Image 1 (spheres, rainbow, N blue to C red):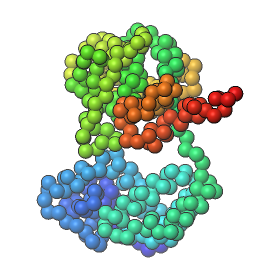
Image 2 (image 1 turned 45 degrees about the vertical axis):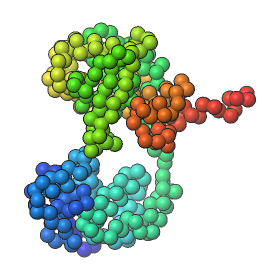
Image 3 (image 1 turned 45 degrees about the horizontal axis):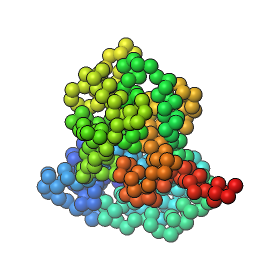
Length: 339
């Protein structure tokens, strides 16, 4: 194997703080490696470099950097050939999932495109290698279970009225009613909530699928049961004396409320702990179960997909289907109509 052209600490796929030190950036979403890379674009404007760095979300940049460093440490190089990339996939096929290998390919492709090089991952050798791995070793992706309405209510029934329970009731109900992602829950500010006659309107200024900050609004109506999300959110805000800033905050074992906001991991832990207390298997659930739970429960209740997508923000029924396919198995079921 030849010595790699780029090193694992190359700013091509590094985080913004590292990349900005290079002073050399590429016009295709990332910073470029260094002066040894061919076809380097060199914007001189500091503003241009900053905007190029901002074109990728920090989490995306971090993922690219990690995958790229792994490839270089293995012995990969930029530019790379189809054969080298195929060997890389084959060598890791028994230790990593097909989904992980596909993500690695995306990072290798990004590295080449950013340096204005031919992308080896588009070659038939690489595609055939991945198809062969998928045929022999591929397995269906494991999705977390949706927290359906009935299970959500059973989970809420297991809580009391201490301050942490009040917070978790509001968090679970709002996450479910708004089909919110973990990041959207933890980044929710009080200023993003507007009280209206029919409930509340939440403004999501930026999300996973809206990196440019177009924003969208979600209506959360008053509930018809005692588990009204608007009521329980108000209870939490009053009890926690939240007057500005982030809505959901850590609560320690003594009931003291932190001024910081929860992490996405904390949301997942809350979901797991609460469903376990209700007698459900915590390993089957995560923070994403709230979003999937609303979508699936709505389909079961007969809500049309357009209305569901207004809440979830999915652009198409095809994207929504990944959340509700379990429910669809029994909606307008052929056997159910005749047996």
